[in-house]
Image (cartoon, rainbow, N blue to C red; front, side, top):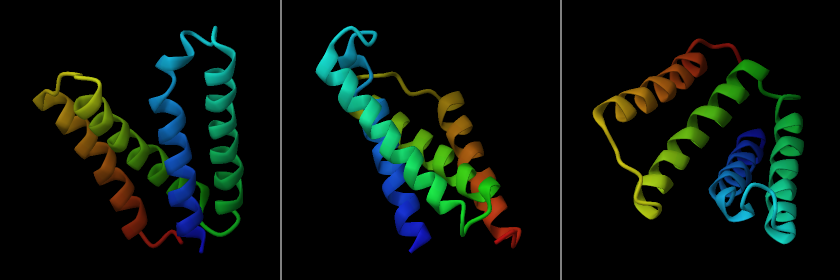
Length: 106
C-alpha cells in the first residue's frame, strides 16, 4: 500500500509541475489554486508514505521518477529539446533511486 500511495504522490506532483506554466507566474488564480492543491496532496501523501518507507528511499523515488516523467512530458508535449546530457542526467537520477532501493534500507 505505501508504494501505491507513493505512486499517487508522484502523479500529483507531476501534474502540478506540468501545469505550472499555465499559472503565468502564479498570476492566474484558478490554475494557481489547482497547482497548489495538487502539490499539497502530493506532500500529504509523501508524508504518509515515509511512515512505512525510509524517507531517503521514498524521496529518491518521488523526485527521481517525478523528474523522469516531467522530462518525458516536456519533450513530448511542450517541444522541449532532448540531449544526450539530459538523458544521461535522468538515467543517473533513476539509477540512484534503484541503488537506494536495492541497498535494503527498507
